[in-house]
Amino acid sequence: MQLDRSVWGSPGGALDTFLKNGAEFKVDIDALEARFARPDAGRRAPTAGGTDGPPGLISSRSRRVALLDPKRSTKLGIVMKKIEAALGAKEVAEAIITVDESFMRQETLRMVLGILPTAEEVALLRAYDGDVELLDKPERLLLSLAAIPRLEGRLTPR
Image (cartoon, rainbow, N blue to C red; front, side):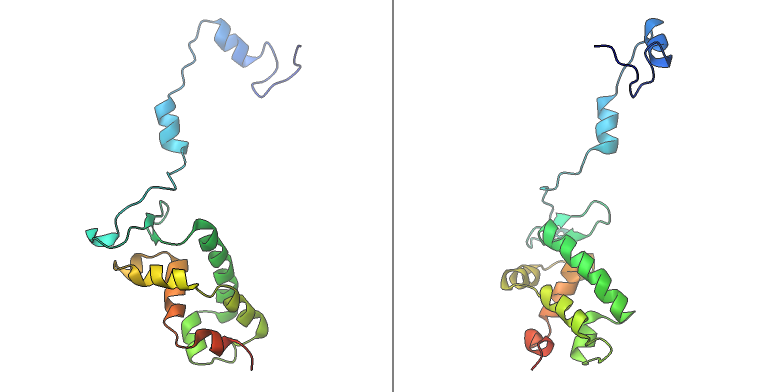
């Protein structure tokens, strides 16, 4: 079967001319892998500071410690953006503790209720003994929410 066009151009085009003239076509696999390979998502690294605490995943883009499941972390990140838009510069935990009425809109409360940390997540985050500033944003948010007494009761309407 003869092709009219391909991703390399038309038959008899520049690539065919290049290859017919005896040019050797080599691909540097190591360079391609170094440049485009996905970081190993399962790679475990020690906690920050070299402590013997629980291991966490190190995010390659920001060098943050990620303890949560990647899907959960992504969901939290999306909701965090929406909540931050509603709050402006104010922190979520601060708005909940101070009962900030500008924050206490139903839509925002539903979003926060949807991302409350589970008991397992709270235990995981509290077991982390590295520098809290090295935790990724979703982990820091859940840690700050976990520190609020009677959190769910503060957020649910009476």
